[in-house]
Length: 189
Image (tube, rainbow, N blue to C red; front, side, top):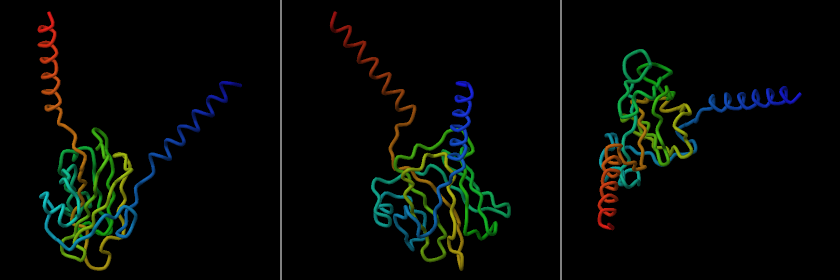
C-alpha cells in the first residue's frame, strides 16, 4: 500500500513539473512588466542612452539578441547566450508582430535583473522595454500583438543588468587569495 502511495506522489510531482515547464511568460505591448517605450529608433548601446531613454543605470549588458531574417521565421541569433536560446517570429516571416523565445538547453541566463527590448525602429513607439523580473531563464517568452497595423518586430534582445564576474576574473581572484594565505602562513612561523 505504501508503494502505491509513493508511486502516486511521484506521478503527481512529475505532472506538476511537466505543467510548470510548459508555462510561458506572456508579453504584450501594454502588459505587465512594461518599463518604458520610446520613439528613439537606434540601438540603445551606451550608458547615457540607457539612462536618458529608459531611465536605467548602470548600462545592462547584451546577453541575447535575435533579428528577423529571411523567410523561415527563425531569427538570426547573437550574444553570449545565442546557443542556448532561439526565437521564432510569426504572423509573417518578414513582417512579424509575434515571437516566441525558447530555451534550447546549455547555459541559461541568470536574470536577477534582466530586460527585454522589442524593437521596430520605423514605427511609433520604436521600441518597448520590459522587466523580466521573475523570469527563471528557461521559461518560454511569448510576444504577441506588437505593431499589428503598420510595423513589425525587427529584433528582440535580452539585457542583463546584474554584474557577474567573468570566470577568468574569479580565477585570478582565487589565485590572489591563495597567494595571500600562503604569505600570511609564512609570516606567522
